[in-house]
Length: 211
Length: 379
Image (cartoon, rainbow over all chains, first blue to last red; front, side, top):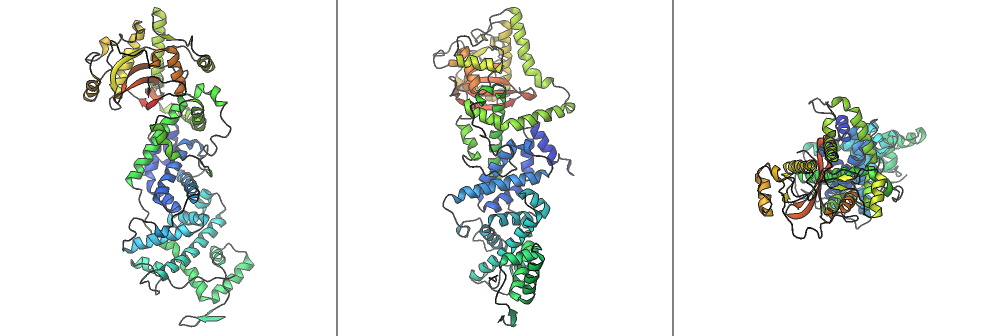
């Protein structure tokens, strides 16, 4: 049971396997926003995210018996969603690509600082290599631990650390580029400072190369 | 070494690439290499600045508000899950009789399905099209498609059975789940005792394939009172309509007056007007009256043509087509559904309810013409 007296995730999954027609839906509703965020951030496209989530949830619904119980239900669900999202990306790559830079996202032209940052971040995420992007989404956006992420991705923890760190470094470099190309961008404060101040991002210079 | 910026900060001419810097921050570099990169960073404002920014990315990302799932997406997902569950339940209903057709399935047809937590990496038709296939009546109800779904759901079914066993203690009685079957058994016994002329579908004279199917499944001969009403079944009123249909069907069997399938329910229509009522009126009644009941039909033009379910062999074939070979129907009604001609087949389901299959009246092997499947209807 949860603190609210609701059946916990494992109970819901067991109920689903026992034939309760509503249990799995309850589980999905409980985690809907997190699962949506993971799918959206991984695919970078709302339509692909919806398709991926549908694939994932039907797969999970049918394969619930495959849940071994040695990880949290959310860990298992995240893994299913990420796999489906990556699958969706691979299918998308087989057809003409649409750059996120030119994609009409909700609030794309909204001047609100948070929206600008969000679009920047989503565009930057889309440019990351797939393994780095997924690791960063789970650790930095979903606030999962390195251990949880390693479990979801089925890689060593050191690999997760490396992927996250590389992703952050790449994002830092990309966000610098974004700022230098944005009209009116200034170079005095970095993105973090501006996000904290509620202002559009600003980054200086470009990353070092060599070695 | 060069200088950079207004403060003349020394910058080495050769910088480690970003990955090396990142791995240094992640503390995953071998000691000797880490030492070199560390030394560089300590003397390079540019690289140190990049690492500082990278470190700040995490706190920046954590501040990003997650976007909430739009309601329309949730509706779409729930609809897709419902369709998938119905498909699985329909396929599971035919599990016991699928041995013969399973052997025709290519091995690994369901690869990647058994454990969705594993890398999927599959291709082919998206699951998202399931709803469409169900809507067009091409749901996996016959031949290999049924077999495939049955096999896909096999692990879940197995676990489900296990879970049910484990939860026996939580359930007050198994009677509710067995009730439909017990009712049928009781009806069959009464019919046998009376020696009445209820329709007994033994498949004799049918195709050898049908006979083989029945034999393979080890099913008992079908005993069903086929009713033929003009009832326009509607999803909303289905529990009440099915309740009346079952009652009339059992009564027909008990009274041994089911050979025509027309007479047994005359006295049990709960005040409904008799047969000649127009379908539209029937539909309105079904909506308006919670006790909407199937109405007996005195005669129906053309009922012998294009309504193969009147034939015992054809009914057997239809049951096989919808993956229910060997399942004893509780009731069958040649009627209407949502304004169109249809056959209503009521099958027992777990939990004391009934699975109601709405199929074309010429439902047959290879073309079941499924219109709708409503699982676990509880009258």
